[in-house]
Image 1: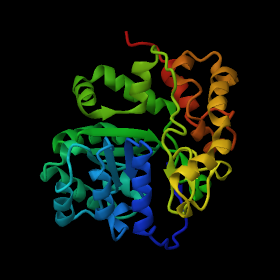
Image 2: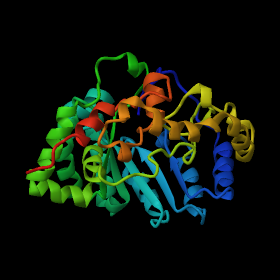
Image 3: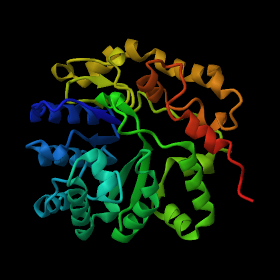
Length: 330
């Protein structure tokens, strides 16, 4: 999700509050935790926080989400001191060149991110590193080149997700979602380019190809809403990172225990699972779609962020339908 906010300075969340929240989440049975931002390396006690997460025996995965621009040899050495059986580093990279990445991230950021990724790879952390790519109209054609780069550097995975515009980004024409023809061209390449297909199965996870390969397999549920709580730096808790809607926000979270917050959230979020089931049955745009049993109405968080209505189709509906309606290769 691209959520462009203003450039006002935000004070880091106090370390003692974050440590308390980490411990509470572990005590409540949490298995996976992600430290995101902003940029985690901007927090003065980032290493203490990350160490606390990695030392919790019950956490199966700890994900550090970064743009890698602030990575240094010293910081990479510090990461090597942490338990490697559960730590993953997820690096945001939105292009295979300065032109595409810097278009949204700012001048000079591509080179800094690549330097950080190389530091991770050279330190032996390549297989613990994933590249997160936001699919947009202007950068979608970079995916094959990014797969080559990921393989060359020994990075474990390239994972793509489609742009979701939030905040001031909704009023900008600078960026846009990919168009159906781009998805279809990529699927055609997947079938005709053996090198690309091999790389993909070794290193890739791209929405268009996953939908294409999985469309004949019914899904029980595509929505992880409520399963993955999201707390932002403004002290609000949401049912999902894809649904940062004030209507479903629990506010002033730093003053209360996580258990209290979850109890408070129950009446706010109680309708969401039922709405998810209604979407699968009632969305008129889904009725004749050949992929309806795979898509199940898509992500309702995306639908709400894009349209302000949980009973609308998600913003990727045209992309999904193009994939589902594509004829199999001859």
